[in-house]
Image (cartoon, rainbow, N blue to C red; front, side, top):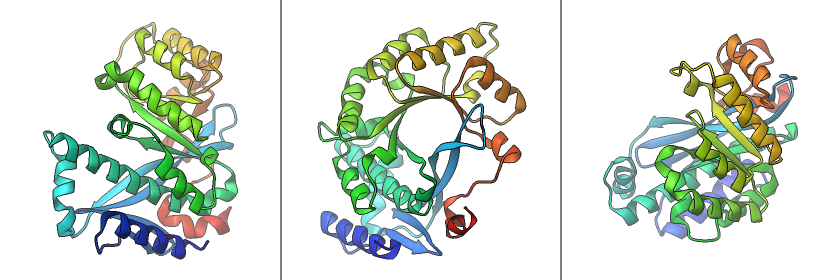
Amino acid sequence: MPLQQLVEYFNDRFEQEHRVSFKPFVLENGTVSGLFGPLRINSNFVPIRKTQYTTKTVGVFAKLNVSTCDAQPQYATDIENLLTDTPQQGIEFDSIVNFDRLSRTVHMLNFLPLTHLQDSLFLTVDPRHILSIKHDHGAYFGEVIEHCGLTTQNVVIVLAANSQYARYHQELTNGLKNYRRRGYRLALRFDYLVKEQTFEFIQKLSPEYVGLSVKSLNSVCDSSIPGRLRKLTSLVKSTGGQSILLDVEQKISEFLAINAGFDLVQGSHYEQTSFPWVSADRQANAVRQY
């Protein structure tokens, strides 16, 4: 189905679901953006590469580019509830779920011109979204993927794990396994140096990918770090997964990825030394370029 028709379909679906006269998806110059309150959401795709063969990619990590626009009155309350620190519980979760679904639909639509590369789309899901949905995780987005002509196997669901949600590991594991039952692959992303107690979470979930941001190591002066990283990559390998060193910006981090045994890497360092990639606003040229 042509991209314009898909945008019209999802706009009609949104209007019916929310009983409003508002079209949140906008197609301009071959790129889809989404409107949520005063925010305009766009996609930026960052390639994930093989550590030993950095010209080879396995997928793209979808990141949000957010700008402001004129807010729609009916969504002013929703966005305030999403951004405030102390919203009403039920309304907060509704806003998070709606924002998550909107942003993932934008990413999926913008990913379509890149599917000829046969890579996977890595999509981050808010932990609160997973906790607020009691069952049928991934069902709604599965319909989005199907209408785009793809399957759930093209998508990797990424949980940004942090210590704040450590006591909810069991609930998060259950929710993520629901995604897996629908064919999605799973990834955990850590923005802090993983501790021993987190290893059990990794073993229990056995995700296809485990990512660690190199930025989490910048403020740590510990001679045991190389050994701890090798322990992490060995653990991931033993569960059948692949490890990713994220946010690599310097040559020294490239050496760290190699020495610690990370399977995959991502970061601006490789965009400077390897072939250029594309962001969503250049996708119209991407098909011709590749």
